[in-house]
Length: 93
Image: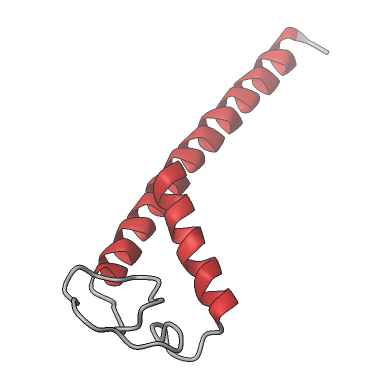
């Protein structure tokens, strides 16, 4: 391999590394932005049930039983997974 070929390969590798790092930073920023949007959306959710996963500070007094009704027809396991994912993204970035 000639010096010029080695230099070209080295430059290509360095460019790929910079692009990968830029993509990584961009993805992290997008994840944080998504987490913030979802956090703001969830901040005002509260179905009034005692087991509501969101429980905004607005409700007090008596609450219903029967399970969280936020996020419509999602099963409890799906709701829990979504909430945990958002919390993990917000925490880990």
